[in-house]
Length: 165
Picture 1 (cartoon, rainbow, N blue to C red):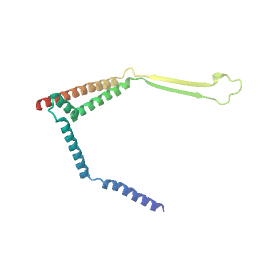
Picture 2 (cartoon, rainbow, N blue to C red):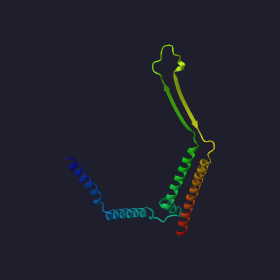
Picture 3 (spheres, rainbow, N blue to C red):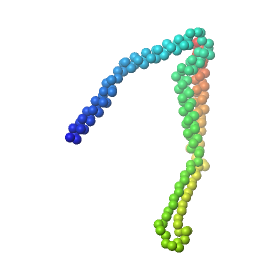
Picture 4 (tube, helix red, strand yellow):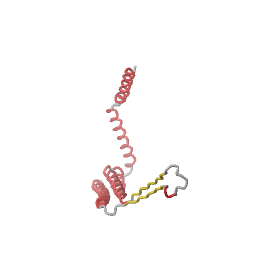
């Protein structure tokens, strides 16, 4: 009985897994994506090319739709996050603990000093950690470099649009 159930379960699992893959037609999906992209381009063409465009409008369109500019902006954001994350190593680390230890019923007349109570708070911060400073400096330099790359990417695209336009 148990073996029959496991075979039935395995069969249903295999059918459900393979039926999902069989329903996807990659050629149809690619045609639909191509048609959607073509329609989007036609819409943008009608929207922007009704009237002659100024150089500033051409540059704006190029900046908005450029993969290179988007990638450069994302790399700049990632470099900033890396720098900010690296800076967190300079923040102090705080640990706290508390404990109460009781000794059960104490005989009458036992001094209170025999009862034990403990609390502790620990704050630590590395004073001299050259690797931390090196990592933060590298992250800071990476962020500055990514800002420069982003600015030069935008300048290069503006120059290409100006020369080719």
